[in-house]
Image (cartoon, rainbow, N blue to C red):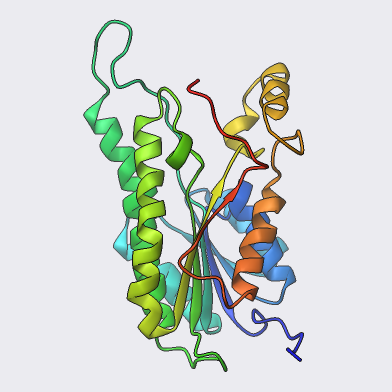
Length: 258
């Protein structure tokens, strides 16, 4: 029979975007499961607050910066072996490829969204993997787990989501390749593709718009909760046979064109 000891006990975990939303919920779940969590975020005040509440550590960082992320990985490995990285940082954007006046999508904005959502994901993945590679393997040969965040927009991109969908589609395509690359190091890689989750990104919408979004979900007819994501992320860490997989967490919704 498998033991019930948490694989997170006595280890450190890095959570990007951990000051709010998906990242905050995940950081709290990981801490509750026994990990010492390092929160990587640009929001220093909120990041320090959450880190203090979960007895973790805050690392101010831009996910696209090699120096910032390297420092956060070093902070985590100094606390305990880094065995978990959950990457939640990212931005949303809405802009048509051509607007009604016939003007093209901003190329600078397209680059920025890919820089943060896709290149930032790879930057964190590669540096976290390097920090995990020196760990002693567990009985299955595992040294670490990396969970990235995509979106159902990678599959069901709506009007105005060219940049966002492209960036998240890249994260989806990266998953299996990264898992294959890192198999020799004993590091698993999975991705969660959330649907409509009640995060600060949706928090600014009027109540009637939020209700309409909830009713568009197949079942259950509600917006997802950040803890739904956190629960799945921690289960991926615990389930050693999940690897190279992208999991839609969307209550069955398939997004319409707009």
